[in-house]
Image (cartoon, rainbow, N blue to C red; front, side):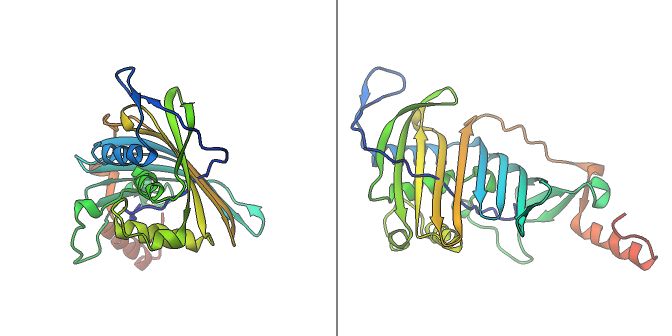
Amino acid sequence: MKAIRIRTYVSAAAGTALALSLTACGGGKEDTRDPGAVLKAAAEKTAGTNSYRTKRQVTEVNGTERGEYAFSREPDLAERRTWRTTVKNGKKEPERFDHAMSEGRTLYTRDAKIAGGRWMSSSLLDEGEEPPKPEDVLKTAEGSLPKLLGVLRTSKDVRKVGRETVNGHKATHFAGTVVLADLAAYKGDAIRGWIRDLYVEDHRKDGLDKVGIDLWIGADDLPVKGAEHGKGSKGETGVTEEYSDFGADPGIRIPKGKDVITHEAWLRDIRDKASRGLDPLS
């Protein structure tokens, strides 16, 4: 989670684009906006939301990961729980659970086998590094949503697929294919340059040339689901995310007091135990 920047993923829907109208929230008036206008409104609405939750399912060549994330912008809090299964040499390894939280620029992680199971705190900034500008921060807990909204807006074939119900919410399904070479050359204002470059770099590392993206936009222009998938030289990858609790208290409780040890104090403890011939991880 030291990566306050994030990776992304998702799936392109097949089928004929349907010309349909959307029912605007709060009335029977038809919403005749084109996909670009709806996605732009969703990007603005999401960026202005103080908090939400994300559930993510990732499928990669070397394994799978499911995650539950929550965050708030003010106060600056984030929490991540992930369960990852890795495949090495054709064998599936035991599932690994990871739990982390952050408050401002302080990261908290916990491993039952380390530091007596206490939370370990460390800085998200390298020594002497200046804090990033708020607009240049993407939290892991935001999931892929900020990138998906921007990247899909650059697609040359973005379209409305239809009206669907997602987790009890009526939503409009949008889909498109993004060619990474086209995205790398994109100069518009749908996505910030460094986010665009990071997206292209990450997906090219996975051996992809293009990515299919789907987004389901619900009431008040708030997304309820995102998906992404691609097939490249290293195999197939995909991510599905569900979004909820926009604006609600995420319920993140940062550990305090005796439940926490700093990374520096933990290292000192290891050195002290080693000097006395004791197991440093005990």
